[in-house]
Amino acid sequence: MEAIYKRELKSYFHNMTGPIFMAAVLVFTGIYFVAYNIVQGYPYFAAALSGMSFVLLFVIPILTMRSFAEERKSKTDQLLLTSPVSVTQIVMGKYLAMISVLGFCMLISCLAPVIIHFYGGGSIPADYMAILGFFLLGAAYIAVGMFVSSLTESQIIAAVGTFCILLVLQLIDGITSILPSGASGSYVCFFILFLLAAAFVYLMTKNRVISCGVGAVCEIVLTIVYFVRQSSFEGMFGDFLNALSLISRYDNILNQTLELTTFFYYISVAAVFCFLTVQVIQKRRWS
Image (tube, rainbow, N blue to C red; front, side, top):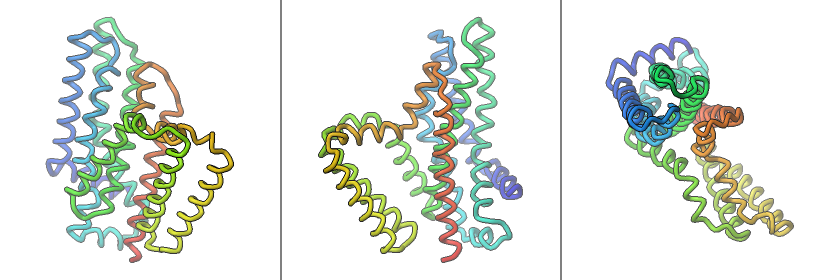
């Protein structure tokens, strides 16, 4: 894994991907830092990072689009898959290289709280906690982008797909406000969600029996629960989507509210998508 990590990390700086990504992150961080902390006088660096969460939607796909799509298109993935390393080591080596590039940007950003504190404002521990939260948010986004890249050999499709998914995650709070909040509306939304889950299982396994079985069991259980406790479905789907929101959890950090569950959630999201990426590559390895 160490060899793959070093190879991937070097590759990001042997082409323009790494420099473009770092330049975009640092330039926009600097712009928000000057606008919020210097000009407007906000004493917390978290105010600048709040604007950067939207910038991640555009720069993360640039970083992740080539992680597996390029290997697949150039057929060099066959060399990796036949090498004496596990698929998990391959995925984690690439993933650690990408979050290292993001980590370099965050290390440079650590100078901002010191500058704010030098001028007599802010709280260094709170600002560093916000930087850590922002890094973990970016790490979760990177895991999503890597997963999308593993599904295609086109870097453009990988970038656009990652952007669309991250955009939905970004706007999930607004989406829940337009969804039906009644019990029947929540039931229909969950019904559609489970159908999509069954389709995803089929995409991953290419096994109709397993995918149809998973979908049928979920739909039957959902229907039984709906008729037994229909009142509990009031607003349930909206609450479910809000619980999945990455941005709303980061808002707690921006409001100086430390919740360790937020950090664990970001780590869990990253772990889930890394696991899914491993399954995609593992399936391709034996196909």
